[in-house]
Image (cartoon, rainbow, N blue to C red; front, side, top):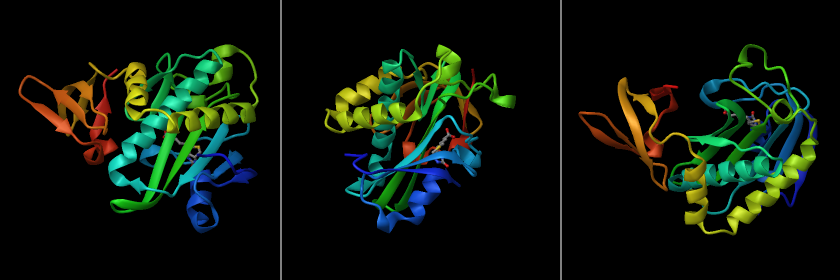
Length: 236
Ligand code: BTN
């Protein structure tokens, strides 16, 4: 389970960085929260704007973590986010592998980092949930928040507690059922993508994260571990 220990800091550079620097002092399942981050990180070396008012947290998993299961952590985290938002009345979609969107605008991001080769020493799951931010500057047409959608302020800790409960429930549930929930919320099947400069349509996602992509000439199975996000472009 996660969240037996939750430690909140006024400010950190990045909750993922903090966890990685303190691996040996943190027990599996520990959650680190920062009210703001000075160097919040996103996928593809993007920065993750992290002013006061949103939720920024990371948790560490040390037991039985295998590279071959990385996609499972993404599925579990994404479904926990979807369920949490739903409790506040928000229906979010999942964009493979790990973005949650509302009306095509991003509301949460997940950054998973790991250490080790096949049997991993640990993984860090870092999650940002846009809660009370209403101005995203240049990203206003790409990002949204709970407040933007519902016109109300939310307590960041309440959202975190709901996430922790949902995640722990998911850990106790049947993996297949949770994966079905992920697929049900996924909006990518049938969508066009470019992969290694060729155009394809996604026809399926398998439980280990492999995606099946087709075009007139070819069908490819691309393993999650082979997908470099730089090579995968979505066409809206
Ligand atoms: C993405 O690009 O979609 C992933 C964003 C992940 C942001 C979270 S906020 C908490 C944790 N700490 C970080 O520096 N990044 C993650």
